[in-house]
Length: 159
Image: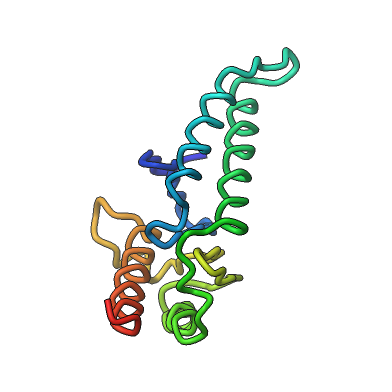
């Protein structure tokens, strides 16, 4: 499968005409103890021996899923920041999901949790053609979403 692959904190794989599942967290939503737990868990996972009947790529994928599940558990049950549990703040994010729907992307599904969002969307080909070279439609869409919602939510929160 072709595409543009980047790794920052988590891998980002941009594939033309593909849907994306995004998890985006509020800054500080995982407390310091949770971040330490994630780092220790990552180290623990790296020490696990790969079963003979599983390819290295499949083993890496399984380990990533385990780590992601651990992070999701911290976000769901122990978040340090919970701004999205306020209806007025959550509405800002929900409104933006639909604002560019059918213009920039097909918004397939989303959920706003107290400390993070999950969003499944697919950039529209006609929008993708307008994206500057060196950027992916996912990057442009997410930058727009995060920039606007951060500004509006911070204004509403008085920050």
